[in-house]
Length: 139
Length: 67
Image 1 (cartoon, each protein chain N blue to C red):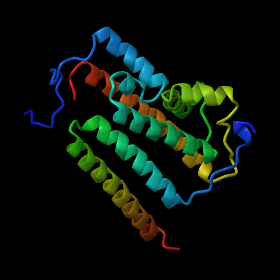
Image 2: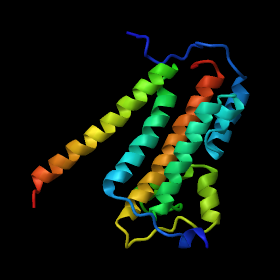
Image 3: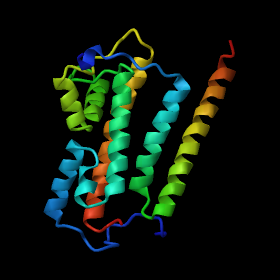
């Protein structure tokens, strides 16, 4: 039975944009954390998402976490790579800059890797939320 | 200085958990609740649950291997 807290697919507010544009907002939100909220003029939400995702990613980087590369030999590596990839340009930029190599001699390095994967997963969660907000399914 | 050569951040495990809980709770609150009041409440609740889970796991591990 549906309750007031159950998410529904029916619009609860006026759609802010079209379906096609909402999909592009998701892509933009994936590449740059919070961008979709900024384009929808949800400044505070966008700022918080950007601060949290980027903050988590850079803390992971500073903890000497390692970014996963594409490697089909190990299922866990693939999952880690997908998680890292969800950070969008943070991932690509760090790889291009030569970061995210990690330090196997630091115990906190594994924590750092977990931080960076989590940052990506939070970013995708926020990007999916952007679509709901854009289509009026959520305020 | 390249990113690869950046100095390592040194955090205690507890501080790392606090940071993780803070970031995750804020995003959960934004994405899973709609009204500002609900978001604040949900975010605080998530943060407290994260910390409670951490303490619980710590005690369980301690009781499993107290030495």
